[in-house]
Length: 323
Image (cartoon, rainbow, N blue to C red):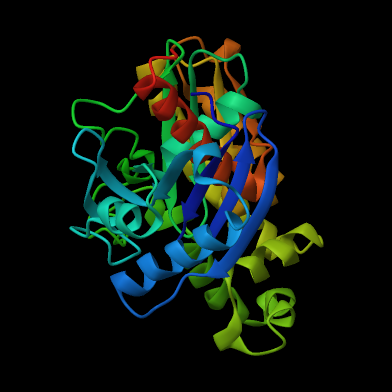
């Protein structure tokens, strides 16, 4: 039976967003809350509460199911969370817990994969068969579409683009590795650079964004100061763009995509960082670099919700033999 709606869940290190999505990609109703800090079951309870909020009044027969994006390594075939850097969800059977309470089919996937799914179905990558998406926010995630299909690898764990090594024995990454891209581009890394600048006279514009309190300096303070024209804050983000560009060189040389999308809260707020990354990639990449377009994603905070819903529609239709 063809269903009208699916629920998309985007679980982030900062907030959880849930939406009721119709088949044409319109979000009918959504709910968003800060991600709770009380442990894994507080996160699961929040997911369930938000799902129940958005499906109120919708008959169960109208729902294709629930798609959930998790910021971690997902064994897609087993639907298990193998590793999760910024949330305590590794080893937690999120799928079964949500299914048992909502009585709906649930499919989980990496949040970067689903952001790419959303952009492919209804966003900036519509019609692109070979593209890469990087989501730059609390962490750095990613997803890849090759030959028109999401590429997940042998166990569904491919696409951890934020954990490519960009500096040998470099900065410690939240995952425990060294020199990974996330260690240079995630919110924590940008905030650290902002604090360093704010501690000196030259960083006064960044400090002003934090209300004069150095302990309140965040990545958003750096971004806002940069957008307002502060040279120091802009320099921090241009340095991030250089590192990002060096990573893009590797992605282009290996995968030869037609399009690279940069999304996430940080990626979509700092267009000059993305422009700098594109310049570096164009200067240094080999494989078809003149044909590669680097652009910002267009779905914003809705990308994860829409991608998760798209996955749920596809899984439902596959079960029903509609593909």
